[in-house]
Structures are given as C-alpha cells and as structure tokens.
Length: 393
Image (cartoon, rainbow, N blue to C red; front, side, top):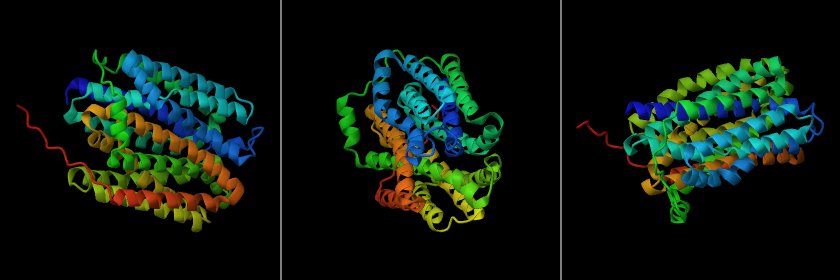
C-alpha cells in the first residue's frame, strides 16, 4: 500500500470508529436509563428508541451514496455528520422517550456509511481494497469492545445525557478527520447506476451477505434491549459495575478472535471460521434463552457473543468488497449498509415488542431461529477465491 492508501484507510477507519463509538456507548445502558424517562416504561418505545437510528439509516444509505456520486464524497459525509451531531444533542436535551426517539431519528439521518466505503473504494487500488475494508471492519469491532467496557463507567459519571453529548463531540472530531486527514477523492468518482443495483440484488452470494449483516445487527440490538436489565435483576449488579462483566468478556473474546481471523485470511479457512461464528451465535441465543439465569451464565454467553460478533464484523466488509463486481462496488456497499441499518432498527423494535407481549425468552428464540436460517445460507455460500499476492515490478 502507498502512504496515501494507508492514510486513507486509517482516516476512514477513524471516521467509522468515532461515529460508532458514540452509538455503541448507548447500547449497554440505555434500557436502564429509559425506565426513569416519561414514557420509558413501555418496552416497545424503548426498543423503538434504540432502533430508530437504524430506520432512517436504512431509508437514506442509498440516497447518500448516490448523492456522493453527484456532489462528491466529502461534502456528503460532512453533511451527514452534521446531522448526526444535531441529533446527538437533541437526544441529550430530551425530557422524555419521544424526545430521545427524535434525536435518534436525526442521528440516523446522517447515513454516511455507504459514502465512506465508496470513498475507500475511490482512494484504494483494487489489490489493496480488502485490506482497507478489513481495517474499517476491525475498527468497528474494536470500538464495540471499548464501548462495552466504558459505557457503564461513563453512565455512572456523566449520565445518559452526557453520553449523548459525548457522541456529538466524537462526531465533530470525525468531521475534522474528514477535512484534515483523509486525502482528496479522485475528480471522477465511481458512479453505480440502476443496472449495477439490479446486478447486486440478483447476486446470490451478495444476498447471503446482506441477510447476514441484517441478522447480526438485529440480534445485537435485540440483545441490548434485554441484557442490562437482566444483569441488574439476575445478578443484583448496579449499572456502574457492569464493566466487571464486560471487560473480561471483551478481553477473552479478542484472545479467540485474533487467531481465528488469521486462520481465515492467511490459511484459507474463511468459510469454516465464518460459519463457525454463525453457529456460535445460534448457541449464544439459545444459551441466553434457556441457560441465562445467573450472572455467571450471562457473562459466559456475552463472552461468546463478542467472539462471534467481532469475527463477523471484521470479515464481512472484506468479503463484500471481494465478492462484488468491480463496477458495482458502490451499489453493493449501499445495499449492504442499508440492510445492516434495517437490522439495527428491527432488532430494537421487535426485541422490545416481543419482550413486552411474549416475554424475554421469545426474543432469544426468535433470534436463534434467525441465526439458524443464516447458518443455512452460510453453509451454501461460495467464498471468493483468495487474492494472489502481486510481486513488485
């Protein structure tokens, strides 16, 4: 990779990390905070508040990607981050659950993921695009882990309004990275047209990947509707002490994740590792549902969830960039990010609604069924051929 490509990869991964860190910080503590808000006793509204971000993301990802083709990547990314900042402070100042929902909708309106990944494709040569996508995916996995540890401590220190405000500040830092760190985009960006979207939507391998990212993020959001309260109820653990569960879980998950990813990429075991992670997700959902009645059991299932989530979050963007036809990468990334956002939305909404009307076990069973379907798709998936390393001339 050239120095410009490394700079682009680090800068774009940082934009994702700063934005996603703020979003992930909300997950482990919001359902606890919402109970004290007017309207926060309704689990359906709590789930909708968590998932509302994903709804507007799902509606606008392709719009932002298309706009970035016409107006340039950086202006569109900055515009989306400004909306995200505004939404963060609206949520911070909210006096009831409806105000938080409004802020989350505005946060989601900054749907920049497709534009950022399209910029990565613009700034990176084909033979190095997988590395940049892996950097982005790994950064998301890392900040997810950090947020699980930091959120309870921050909640005890600055409260939920403070976390929302911090989310806005992190997005402001992301704007500075866009303007000061990321190299300028090429004069003529790639412009996927309608035929490219048709090709993407008819590609069975890409459809499997899109279903996978949808399922992964639905399960993640649904889990955070239930888990914080379960730790308080089952283990008698105050929110400020949840880090005692999250920190060991995160550290142990990375011990397993790193060699798994090395085996997948370096030794050609991608399909085995990928499907093993999906199977582990299935076991985790059943474990939470039927064997999650103690704090130690919850800690075990959470650790295993982190292992599976981090492996899949780091490998899926790389696989998308390798499976998609070169002329349709922008379209493929737009659809991928849209289905990811839809999963975030439905995870909160369905998780809250099922918990309220059918009990918490129904949530875990539904997520287990989703993981089982995904495993079936994964087992029938054809992995892209490993790239041949090009020798320098």
